[in-house]
Image (cartoon, rainbow, N blue to C red; front, side, top):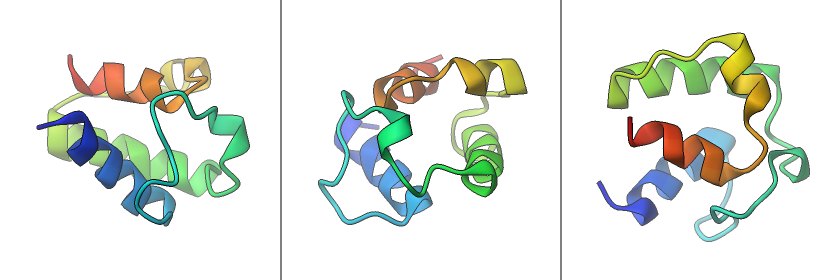
Length: 73
């Protein structure tokens, strides 16, 4: 899966338009990145990438790139 495809998954999850985010986008700047989105992120990461996330990992995410990096594992 390409980075663009991964970004598209996150844009869909955050209910954003295509191209609204990049790897450098800070999560604190995404209004839609709230507690419900974080729960959806946990489910999506498990379903799509087989990656389990815990609260500490999610709290450590600062940018979209941090999430993208976790998708690689």
